Image (cartoon, rainbow, N blue to C red; front, top):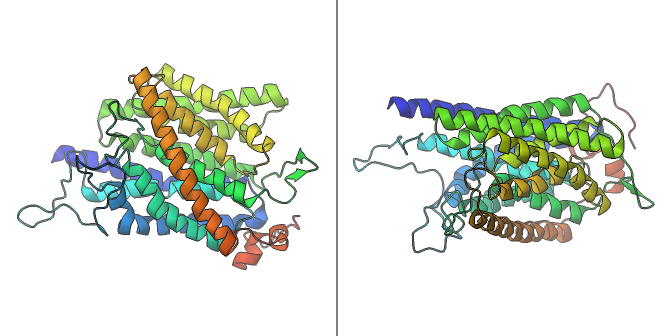
Amino acid sequence: MELLTINNVWMMICTALVFFMHLGFAFLEIGLTRQKNTINILFKNIFIITVGLLLYCFVGFNLMYPGFSESSLGIFGFAGFGLTSPVTDAGTLDLMYNEGYTYWTDFLFQGMFAATAATIVSGAVAERMKILPFMIFTLLYVGLVYPIAGSWKWGGGFLDQLTTPFYDFAGSTLVHSVGGWAALVAVYLLGARIGKFKNGKIQAIPGHNIPLATAGVLILWLGWFGFNGGSVLSADPTLTSLTLVTTCLAAAAGGVVASMVSTILYKNLDLTMFLNGILGGLVGITAGADQMSPTDAIAIGAIAGVIIVFAVSLVDKIKLDDPVGAIAVHLFCGIWGTLAVGIFGNLASMDQFISQLIGVGSYAAFCLVTSFVIIYVLKITMGIRVSEEEELEGLDVHEHGMDAYPDFRLNEH
């Protein structure tokens, strides 16, 4: 019982840290976008975490952990609506859900992860997507798509049943790429912000508060202690401490290398590239944080840092407008981190690499199709993009009737 209590306390601390990440996402997004859209972005982030938790309670948790039978295909299962904790033969509540923590802790920890996929999309579509279609998308993606995708590995589905099981420790693919694929589709269907591309040339649209974005990244880094540390699913001192070390080293390497590569290519010390490099390193290590040595983690983070610089450039070159770099960070580095499990660390082998490829391909197909169907249907039925006037004057005034900085409003066009 004492061990259960220790494990449970650690898991609850990690749950709180993952919750705190939503403040980091909010700060990062508003910092890298213009002040006239601040309320809109904050509203979306608050909507995601509140509605996401309710959806995960009603359907998501039991979609993600349906208890696949050995004879099932491991693609879809559902354990019923709502939270029904395991009950003992005597009819009393069995809070000792497993050896590590209680059923309730399991739900809350996993629920904090669920909303992150939609948060990734929120940043990518910032400053030009209507609020109502985004809310509908969030309901469907967090309520249905994410938990079904998660069940394929974490719920014991077909990817976990491969001869060499697909491995994703804390969600480089299951969380970050799931959000990244949807962000890619959404940005494509929405089109670029007014003024982003002029006469075939890329125009920078600076964010209004880089200090706030920097604070957001540091908060996210702190939250990753819970994101990866909690994914050990116990307070095991060896595994948790190793996981936190590899997580931090990958983040540091990602930031430093992204900054160096960016400086060499563009001849300026770009803080936003430094920040996204840190996030890229964190996303990259997330799939195998418990399986890597410190040097492995540094290599994975460093490569993620290189990927960030070229991925941001690629997204711009193909005329996709991602204000916060979400596609580069979460999709590109999520794919890299997932494949890295087959290249570095304890699981490195050709068989593991092939399983990782199967996983990446499976999630790409599922998320591209589902997100395209959802967003395209919204586009042709109710429209997903605000009017030119609304975009130029800001979504805060037009969609929310308020201003984040009423005493310092600028005429931003």
